[in-house]
Amino acid sequence: MPATESLAELLARVALRDRRAFEGLYRATSAHLFSVSLRILRNEGRADEVLQESYVSIWHHAAGYHAAAGTPMTWMINIVRNKSIDLLRARRTEVASTTEIGDEALNVAADSAGEPQQLLDDSLIKAKIAECMRTLSSQQRQALALAYYRGMVHTDIASALNAPLGTAKGWVRRGLDQLKSCLEAAGVSGV
Amino acid sequence: MNYLLPVRLDRLAREYALGTLAGPARRRFERVVRSSAAASMAVDVWRRRLSVLDLAAAPVQPPESTWQGIERRLFSGPNQSASTATPIGGALQALRVGMEPRFDALPASYVGVLLDPVGKAALVASSRRQGRQLTVKLLQPLNVPAGHVAQMWALPKDGAAPFPVGVIPAQGTSRLALPDTSEKLFFNVSRLAVSFEKAPSNAGDAPAGAYALIGNCVKVW
Image 1 (cartoon, rainbow over the protein chains, first blue to last red):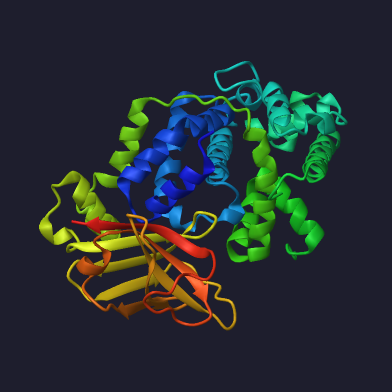
Image 2: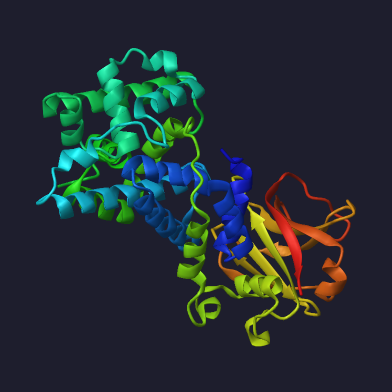
């Protein structure tokens, strides 16, 4: 990922309506943000639409970035995740009467943005908490991965993993609890 | 329902940050987050935790048309630069494209943008090239320790010792009287900074401690 320091400076300049800094920010971050949207929407056209809306929002709200929201990349990822999740769910409501919802939302076949489970495992290794997170069952880890990378809600996760709704909720909750504990144990700063 | 009970707030914040909070509950909680600092902070904490899950994400290059679409959405409308850009932004854009109408540009000026230690823009300083006033706008309140003043310094680009510019307020916008024109004072200055001092500094003084804010000072013409 691009250096946090340079992104913070670019974002500060974008807050002052510096178009060149805005393009620099786009060039430095758009490939990461596009992958976020692609993972959730799994459709290039819709991911592209969300990416454009997200940068329009970043341009307008750059002054609202504050360090408590995490790194500039974390702040931007959350703009993209929110918009992607909103579009995913709006679209599912729209097609619910004519389409089998599960077909699109639950298709976890490989795509250009990576498999949720593999991405989770690789990220945990990079965060140096992989060992700690291994105390979770594979289903608990998978539930966390599907929620975060695919934007799935509990009912989707329950269907995808063929489990009762209450069980799926418990897996997600346990996954988050363990993530918090592992980060605290690892002393990850700012968490 | 009281969303701000600690246990409930943490549960909602983490479900919201993860994305599993859905439908009307998600919309309701978004409204709470917008109006409550505690809720906003709780969401931030979970977003920071979850951000480690992005560490291994492989980038996927979007098509070039994406950037063109963004530019079109933001900048192609009539009078767009005049209606949405700040004066400084307008001037910087004018410098780059060189085609903006003259009335849309700032007069020749020195402009400084100072960042706080976490890289957030905290102060904008500007002065006309031949002016004797420096306008200082705090973008966020400055936490000046009791018994201290916020002293602005100019840092010459040749590495010479910083010289004091004036004492600035902790918030809002103010104008400092300059001892000479900006052109004479800032011609060789590449950065501005703010430190906390026990008393206003005089020529020849040096900053007592670390800079609370620092940033580039540029010529706009």
